[in-house]
Image 1 (cartoon, one colour):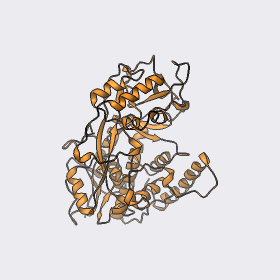
Image 2 (cartoon, one colour):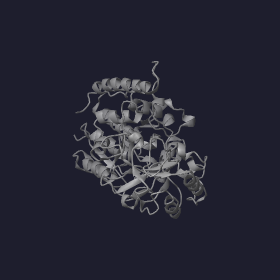
Image 3 (spheres, one colour):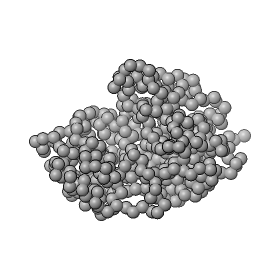
Image 4 (spheres, one colour):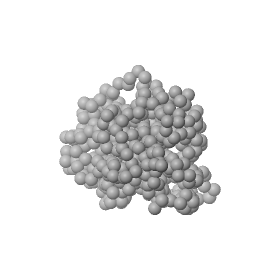
Length: 450
């Protein structure tokens, strides 16, 4: 008798990772992706795991950084997302950044070629009725369609929370004036595939900076729809003009901080610096780091060309804004990501209230692992809370307060406290050392698939 497949709704990073983890354990899976049947506000292609904002998975340092530790644990778990990221990385100092087209193409090809994976291009407008499917994973991401979101709200009895996320512009490399800009990583840091000169930097003096801040604040912005006006931003991904409105020096201590950078074109340290990060393997496209925006398109071109070196910039993509939705996971999910009101339905990815590409994929990995283990009868426990995977899972399924639940990146603040007197970098190292030992014990306990 053939094994019934596990169905996954959504072909983003979480859904793709979940499908991979299920299939590699010998269980068939049907991955449902509505694009191109129904496009979204942010996606541009029909590829699985398309990156719509930054092309960075952030720090790859697994000794002192929580997100780098999460990279490490996912690699050890056979993550498809990490395999594709490593194969298509572009220089980015100590960060793991990827050629977004090559990355998405690799994920799509791997799943399309797997004999146990079926990709269906269709839109789900409601959750399946009880007993029609024994396992479904909802991985629709932050752009969950309105009809499906309504179906989720009807089942849980609670409104989904929502926030805005913004997209940074991308510039053609050959339109940047390198007589004013220069190549350098902050503090000349050398990362995977990097040289210590991985970013393009555009410096400003005080007068240029203050004029730029003024224009960010006064320039016309995209209007909100009436139903969007009370939706809060995610603090980790604020539009550049929102940050500027919080004080004239806010950006100088944020994405435009000049520390660790020395301009060969200036006799003194820059007052502020705009950094651009390579966005594709060819090195022909660069994105403005931290410059998510809701400025109107014409204003973006005008204001961003005030940046020294970008006076004649040609934009491959302008910034934008879209509405993200997520469920109140601490209230409605159990520790294995199952919906308490209907345990046959799991959730994965950003719709659970994690923030970030790699965090989304990590929850997809766990959802796939749990779903496959339920089908095969393997007793797979949740990862220890002392690991990056376990801390992230515990945060969204119980540690966070449901009353104030908001999207969260992985960070050492959600790990169980270290009871050592070590501080600073030594304390961070203590977190990662403990996590690696506990993760390896969990990996061996669950008889990891090779």
